[in-house]
Length: 138
Image (cartoon, rainbow, N blue to C red; front, side, top):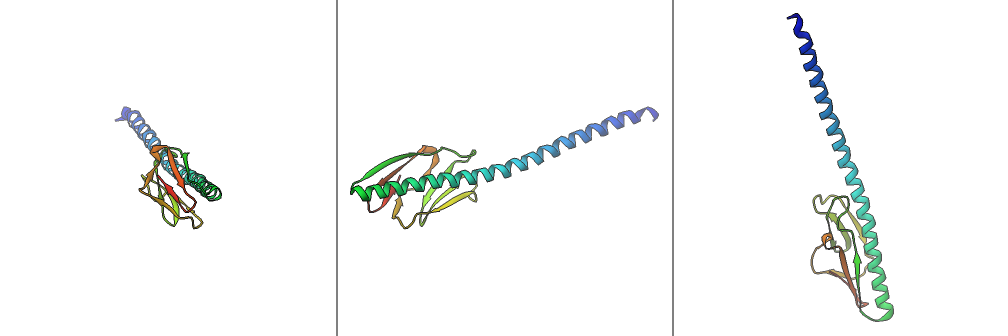
C-alpha cells in the first residue's frame, strides 16, 4: 500500500488536467457564441442600412427622371457564418436563418415596397426595381 500513493497521485493530477481542459473549452465556446451573436447583429444592422440607402436612392432617382430603374445591389452571402433572410413589411427586416432572434429592422420612410418572396443572402445580390411610384425587390 505504501508504493501506490504515487499512482493515485498521478491519476488525480491527470483527472484534474482533463477537467481543466474541458472547463476551458466550454468557457471559450460560450464566449465565442456571445461574440458571434453580437458581431452578426452589428453586421446585419450595417447591411440593412446599405440596402435601405440603395432602395431610397433608386426610388428618388426613378421619381426625378420619371423612368424605370433596375439596380442589382451586391450583398454579402453570409455574415459571421450566418445566412440571412430579407423580408419587407412596414420595415426592412434582416434575420439570421439559424437564429431568428438575431436581426435588424430599418424604417422604409413610407415608401411602397413589395417583394414577391422572402429573399435569402445566398444569391449574393438583390434586384431593386422602381418606376417612381414604388419599389419592387427580387
